[in-house]
Image (tube, rainbow, N blue to C red):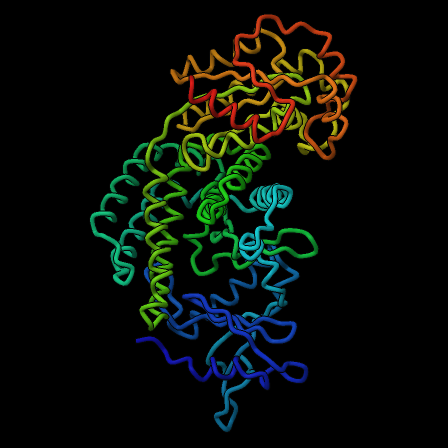
Length: 512
């Protein structure tokens, strides 16, 4: 039986508990916490609940979880996490702010921010955009790089435990109406995937890819402060569940963007993260990671049904829980694999087309986009949008860039993902080498050669700002003076509306 926290909840919900200047307290509820918004502060009380994956059933456990939450979240959001405060009784038995000796419950005190600054709120308002997602991916990559490797944790055994825990929790979520056959089918598919990538998971653990991560990295746990994305509310109650493969950490965000109907941004955040890190070897495990994350949301959403009393209140979360369960299964189903290469001179719109084509290709969240400009920057250890000197554009460096593109494309195909190459590919042998990657992998290849009027290309190149390409009008003039030889790729007129170019490219892919 759960401990009665009604007095603590009443105290925290009263404006008089916070002193002058607080005339109203708003409450945000989750299935494990209550957050009281009072003035410029937020106070987070953990519910006295126990689930298969957490136990807040005693004051001592809640205190430990509060202290862990404060310490862990100060890694990414020190400006938000202020203190842990005790709630207890005075000598007359009245509840109030207390010292540790007389405490009966605990709260995490945080700096309050507007709920409209949550990335979940921005998504609902249609205000998430590519620049913010690119900044978020870079922020996560930096956080993961700084996190401590834990080679004694993670690997195939840890993922197997998560899988088993999900199945138990799904079976226990009677209110959601999950079909037992659907749970069994998901469990079977997931175990098949786990068997396929178990050695990879253990290899990544040995290489230091398992770290003390965020653990609950979805849009409701990311906010925008002073124009920058900030990660907060990390998973504090289980070192085991939060000490995970960095790609499993990222998978929660990717899955959440997909769930919210933002596949373009899901594809973008994954590709930028891979562009900035050395994590592409883990791609084969990503479908399993996405499935596990969706399954977690399915049973967590189902568990929250207990808070709803009216049947009408339960309809929406029940439908959402089932949608998550369907997504968990769909993530594990194989999809056709193909390699697409986009060639053409600078300013023909290759990069614009690549990011619009990729989300719809193959496994979720879509194809790996391999842009030569970005890969060149990675070779030189600079940010994608940082300019490089002319010495970075010699024929020898370009060969290294194209070698890297081919290797990354082959790795993506081997992992079951489609790939989209975005490169000028002005030489016939460069185009042939891309086709050879697909032939070696025994998957279909489509080469699209984009063409636009010279004045259009010059205008586009001249208008670029904060872009990975360093191509100038002088570079374009040089390209225009070179003979690309016989181009046997399908030619796409690309001087007009990007939507029309995308439609033409999609038709070309269907025709192949």
